[in-house]
Image (cartoon, rainbow, N blue to C red; front, side):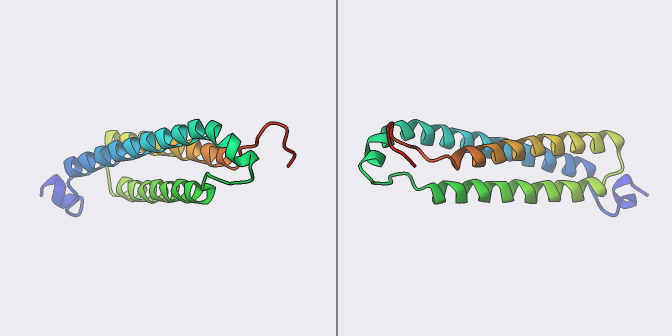
Length: 129
């Protein structure tokens, strides 16, 4: 009986490639999200004049919605990785999946930090809240 058959048809090589692909995709999306947040912060300084004139330029709800959607996506991927991990029997593969899970948790923590930071409104100097 082959190893693949003994694992219920699970191909460890394929699982490993899928995990790597998921990790790369999550890393790329997280980097893009960080860049987007950095651009939003840079734009924030130019918004000060318009905020002082009473116009809200930044659409905070949209930004928070995108951040929350990304967080949900990462959470879904984490759950998928945990399911894959349960189906694996090779200690090295389990260790790799555990490392990947830790990286995704770190990314989720960073997203939560960014969400918290995005909750602070941009204020013009001299304006009271």
